[in-house]
Image 1 (cartoon, rainbow, N blue to C red):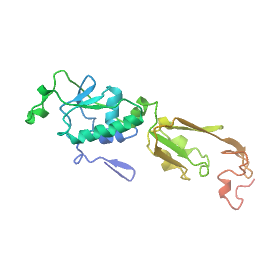
Image 2 (cartoon, rainbow, N blue to C red; image 1 turned 180 degrees about the vertical axis):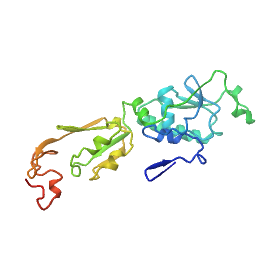
Image 3 (cartoon, rainbow, N blue to C red; image 1 turned 30 degrees about the vertical axis):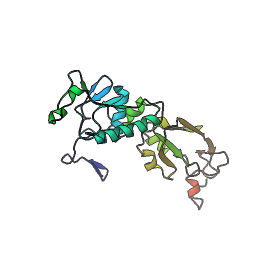
Image 4 (tube, one colour; image 1 turned 90 degrees about the vertical axis):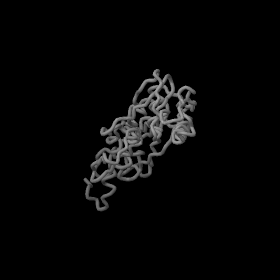
Amino acid sequence: MTLNDGKVNFDTENCISCGACLFACPTGGVDKIVPPLRHYRDNTLVMPLSNMAPSVGELLMWHAEYHIRAVEFELALNPGWGMAIATLNIRLKQLKQPLWRIVPPPATAVDKTRRHWLQIDNNSKTGRATQGGRMRRALFQAVSEYQILLDENQCFLCGACARICPESAIELNRESITLKHRSCTGCGCCEAICLSNAIKLEENYECSTTELAVTEVSCSSCHRLFLAWNEQSGQCPICSRHHYGMREA
């Protein structure tokens, strides 16, 4: 998948349908493939497992949607899955969630030949995790994934970030600007549109909401009302950039 001239190009010939892009996308907007079909029994993912281990994003959805807490496999035969579970548990610890376990398959399910990979417990079910960072944030509302950092010395309160944010994680009114970190999916729209490079996103699992006070003042040059960080602000951002008094009334 590549981005050229503002258009997303999906290379179906090279795609192996691993599903990683489905869970990396902030909005779940990828529609060319579907999430992998996996087998589970009770609270455990069971064989057959995919050759490529799933992403942490997908495993988090299994954790929240299906209440999965373990995976049944032999670590020596599936080192990739072992690394995925270890990485997942680091994230779950940050999210203050129960950790996953690796469960050895029952002796009756182990066949040292290739049939080992084809054997399915008759009591198992199948399912797919819901894709997209937006759904993941909806299921883990108690904690944040990102922190929205706003540099007040750089920001001139134009409101572009609040208007473009697809998750309404930034709200601006006449009295305050509110940063709702727990709603942020890390899409980066606010960073891309900020004219003064005043916004940055960082991974942070301890944030909830930040509210910064603003005030409405009258520009000393054009006399229009504008939002500022304090009442002592003399000129609006537009007039302050006109060094020759072009906007003076």
